[in-house]
Length: 364
Ligand code: NAD
Ligand code: GLY
Image (cartoon, rainbow, N blue to C red; front, side):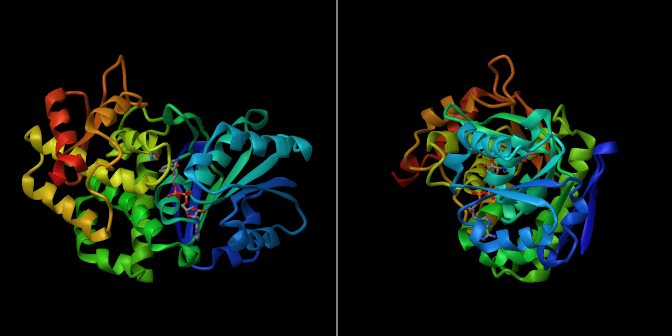
């Protein structure tokens, strides 16, 4: 088992990564410091892994909330369902909320835990690659609003992240690829040697080679843990984790949280950020081509969805948590492995990038 520490003073916690952790007797319970436990999961994950987790919590009062599956259910209504269940079962503040699922469940359950009686203990058991490399670490929790992605939320750190790599066996290939988008992101924003490694090993990852997957999860978590330790509340460097996200969130909102997966929207967004960086004279065309090549090899989208015009995406990009005084800030690349947050770009250059990646335009 690998252990990575997220160093946040008295809020520090471990990320445990290994095969078979959910079956390891006593492991989950070690991080539960209360009698009452609410496990939040969804209709897909519950039949696969809920029993495994419940049986490891023998002796505790364990209740479950099973939500419908999908990004479009990452709403205040779903969060309210969890809170209502906790009230019905007379949960006190001294309870633990466990998120068992992908990033959607982690984000909703975490937000419910942050809000219930002003905050309860929280444990992350991520079951998608995306959640294992990104969303379970760092304490960002949120639900979506019809007008904007992740617009209602809180910072609320878990007491541990328990990552059992065995659960990836049941994850379909499309979801695995979406998770790889966030893995590639770490290489792009701050770890060029990891990007080189990914270029060499992407086929192995797609073939689910165990050693390669564990390595990719570990390096991703190390990168994320270091960034979060430096800037928990995103007043600076943490914003770099949003490479491609202003574009990607606009795509997700524009598609009403349907059809495209989060990682897919981020993939197309990262390539658009790279293209814009090249237009500004920062990134070489060779590096843009390398980024496009690895995304294509992974099987991720590299253009805007057909249903969205560049103008619509541009309009949606204004609803972004990085926007200040009506100005859009973007994470752009100086080179592979070096990102910056900036509003110092020409609006025309951004429009040209959006035009360039419009599927409609490309097929003409
Ligand atoms: P998801 O949670 O929707 O999971 C993807 C699909 O896989 C779902 O259908 C789910 O039921 C299914 N699934 C989960 N585990 C499975 C397993 N082991 N076997 C089979 N099926 C399984 O999507 P995601 O990609 O995990 O997460 C995306 C969400 O994460 C987005 O809402 C995004 O905004 C959020 N996110 C948050 C952060 C953060 O820092 N909080 C970071 C990145 C992304
Ligand atoms: N996924 C962005 C962050 O955690 O900051």
